[in-house]
Amino acid sequence: HVKEELGSRIQWVLDGGICQVGVESTIVWINPETAEVSILRPGGIAKEKIEKVLGRPVLQLQEMQHLQNGLPGKPRSQHLQNAPLSVIASPGLMKSHYAPNTPLQVLSKRFSELSSSDLQNLKLPIEIALLCLQTDPTQARMTFETLGHHVKIAAFLGNSETEAAKNLFKTLRELDHVGTGVILSEPCPSQTGLWLAIEDRIKRAMSPLNLL
Image 1 (spheres, one colour):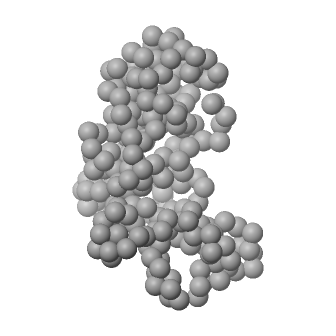
Image 2 (cartoon, one colour):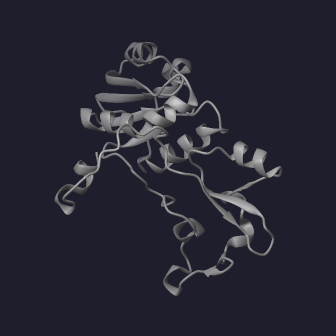
């Protein structure tokens, strides 16, 4: 996918094989004034593992309300004064990050729990793709087709958070290439461990379309 994204802008790609983690690295910041540790970007090392090593709580970006004027020692430049903290705090925190061309939306329920009333307000195109995080793809397909929707492809991220993180970007690209009108995703089953990073990447890949 590197060649597909960058095309003629690069001459060589060094292929190191299949990525063993999938999501990018965790980025932490240590406040030089208080020694407080904060996660700027959740990634392959879970917050819980960092807290276990440190023996104390670690903050998330949204908990860093005292940093609205920039990180100590890293003040905002003048043209970024009104930009969100994440723009300058860490790579990978733009509102849209690695988003597919096909609009992506996350539903509030597992696919297996959906009813006709849940979907009646959705303005779904004729053909849809499903990103399954909790429901078996065959069951998910049957659920939507029973409710009158045509599923062109349904893909399962994996049976564990490790598999899901490893397969996330590859699966999103596969769903994108099928050429449906929308990709629908289930919510993450947890907001701990690697699921926190997976949820973060899916949210940043979402489209602003108002389907819900």
